[in-house]
Image 1 (cartoon, helix red, strand yellow):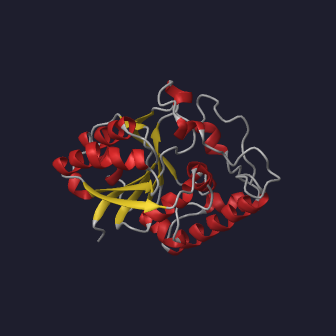
Image 2 (image 1 turned 135 degrees about the vertical axis):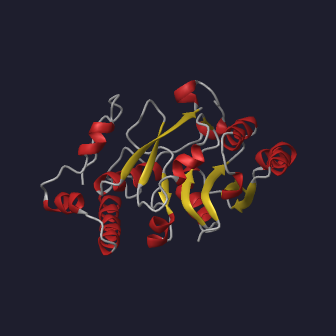
Length: 270
């Protein structure tokens, strides 16, 4: 049995009040703090973030009784976002992993129970955020998924990577958790160097580092097959994925259904 129900994974850099607001919103709206572990990842050269954490956030976490762990990384930047999540994930024993952001605000009281209600299900859980973007922007997935590979994501774009696999395998489940991503391009807030210096590896499919490069596309297909074989071994019907492979099922059918506000400019190809 896992030590925790939920591991909250939070890479952060040079964030101060935004990070505290985020964490306060999460833990003030949780029902069972004893079963949640917070894992924070800082760059080892992040003097601003580390000082603010020690002075303002750490005392609050300890007074609140939050189980937390801090990890230091050599700076990898936004292009290495998945490697922060991968590193944090190696250091927890939880039934569910949840990718969180240092500028996200939890809006739903009892969010942790809404996740644990699905314990035992092999699903990629999706919360409401970004005008109901069809991707699972703050993905929540079971430990079994992580254990199959030993990492969270191959690519920087963790939410897109997990979401695409979730849709191809028909494993997406929307739950009634609401999150505000308090990001400058969405809300006008947190216009700082952390956001300004983001580099996105998307938009040039000829670049081997691009999310839609054939190398990454093929890797996702192979990973889907690994998950499918595992779930079939446990008696789960994987007909959707089988039909995707034989060309009779549109892999993005349910992604399109969930794109209620037309936020996907084009749908990725398998």
